[in-house]
Length: 411
Image (tube, rainbow, N blue to C red):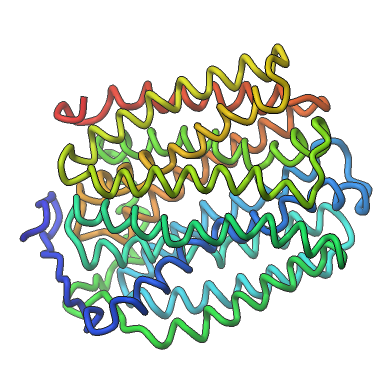
């Protein structure tokens, strides 16, 4: 099977790249962990956000900007790691990123103001994004388009265990210790992952590396930005990410502060969303070979628009109370399983010989959109869920609108 050709140098996917086939479970486990760095960096401390706001004396809506600050580092950092990995391979940049993640997590644990937490979250994010973006590129090193979408869905299902456990674990840590220990736990997770990284092989073969990747990074990203295919796929995922991170930033205050859900039980509600993501990814993994990733992407965007509109109505009217708001938000979140893997696979298939740069650019657009979504929730914060519902609704409509820009066979 050969890769889809592009204006760049065609590259054939190689299932036995760098000996990865000799350690399939080990490689899959590490890839799932690396892909999960973005979520565990935030999910673990979500139940502690109201308590952090009180202890740090933060203004109304200030703690939501710890999400926005994280996303700034996460989106910009990917542009560096993508180009660097195309030049020297995937493993060394990931190792450097994990070290930055450890330093940033320790800085958060030692912070005594909201501004300090926001600053260290940027450092933490620059490190965490290396594992996320390069694990996706590693999948593209190994598999062709639809198979890559299938593997991405499988990996998301595996790594979804972390965000299910994360808020529950964070809530329990908060019961017996201060929120600082949640970040010390992240330091430990980073250390274990760094050690595990050196037990798996490099996936980018030397002959496939680009010695000019860094020097030409800016022009390469500019060239990729002119490709309508990449922009269309990234746009669908980007609007979805805006709504997803609005949910992440706003749900602790909507559920805990407004609807008085105990912090120790917040993880159950959040875990329900992750369970939905796992189910949707399993469905996607089974159906993508039959229907194609584009059709499933359009379906996911249509359902996201519907769920977003329902969340907006519930937040505005208060209809249904906690359940009226939580159910459409859970549905919206679950659609990650139909949107993220398929949008990534579609974008990466356009330039298979520049998977690192393309993955980084798409990731930057996705998480850059998350900055806007989480920031809007903070700006609209008024003690009610209205800002959350409105942002999610607009995001769903935007994702559906972007599907009109997809290649004709996707419509």
